[in-house]
Length: 193
Image (cartoon, rainbow, N blue to C red; front, side):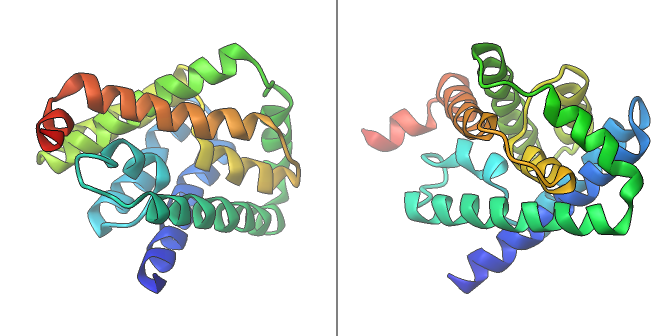
């Protein structure tokens, strides 16, 4: 369990670094550099909820382990955001402005679903031997305004704020990734038979 916690905290830190670049640099450079975070997560084999949840059935993950990953990503992600708030107050305005646009709404949920689809595909492509899914997928979800729950909790930490939309982002990321996994391959179906 300690290994799961450590790898989940490390994943939140790397996504935090990518999110820091996004808040600091904005478009178009920030979304491209953000991909560094997910590349690091995949390369080091770390535990990122949005990178793991789509593989719940394919990799036979335990639900308990996925919930631990989520909890550590959220807690540590918020703490990383607080550290960034202290380290560079110039990004606080960008974080606050971003949080102000988040609403507990159907469109926010749909944008979270679509991020889950992209995250599943990006990690699946990495597992198949190419980083192109990450290099293109991460900027794609950012440029499209799709919502990534772990990036969002880091932004909330920077802003020292909270938004109920985080729940929608978590559910949407999870369901989007699971849906894409289900329709994109028959691995889960074959394992059940």
